[in-house]
Length: 395
Ligand SMILES: Cc1ncc(COP(=O)(O)O)c(C=O)c1O
Image 1 (cartoon, rainbow, N blue to C red):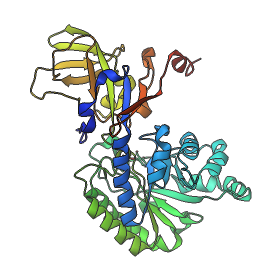
Image 2: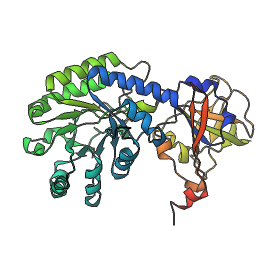
Image 3: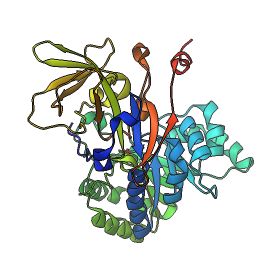
């Protein structure tokens, strides 16, 4: 995969020696800039906009996100709880919309207490858990029920990230949807995009609307999921706003978007240090950043992250982590100066989907989390991890 982000923004001027290594550094001003764009889309289209915690759950920024958006979407009990505790905003009004491909009965009473929307992946799960809902309602909990449908319209460039791939487990196939599946259902959800422009959304809706419009009268809302790269400079925001206004007017329904990546796009870097340099047919540098532990999408997607201050066309060095995994390779990069132990490096656009996926394989330490504000130059450590964090995940 090609990364379409990677603008260094204010990080072009950031001194990498101001933080320990490894460390994520998130620029609060860049997050605010993204949030202002999302809020503008929300306000001008008259929709509700939620931040997807799965992409970016740096909860120290929860109050900031709550000040701009309507709430968060969660992938299960833990994210729902984090959303309620940290993202509810000063007035406590922040919404929590929870969707999970498969709920466990024992989690649902708490999810009912925490969530404004509970979205099911199949009518079967919804039907099975009705007694739990009825009990939650009897206790005074108020929430809407949603059903995720699969539009059966693939727009994904990579099948791993395409919820409409053949035999996908994500969403109830729209060609099986019958009116009785919507008994007790307040809203329809679909999510089928990944880092995409407006046009794939428009095409998806054009394919889907004929199957859904007969049901609009019994629904309260439609949720168009995430995968909208709204804060990227060349995203077609005016087209999106016009489209949302039109769908809202035609359907008479409340509309939701729940982007994740767009909240933190180009807003954070991962700082590392070169530990050793060897030659094995090419220069190879071992760093304290591990692809498998700290940037697993580099291997999983796979993709090549953009590097701060890379000099395109220069001689390349292979950079990899300290773990035993032969494939713990970040990529081949042209450094601005020849690699030396102690030298700092940084990878761009690491705030989303890296911080939430870190692990301690091989006992590799987790990167610290630092918050910088490029407008004021305030820099503070938000969280440091140590041996106890590694040990406490095991027994
Ligand atoms: C249901 C759902 N909503 C929202 C998102 C957020 O997507 P993104 O971070 O690409 O905007 C995802 C991502 O996988 C998702 O599965």
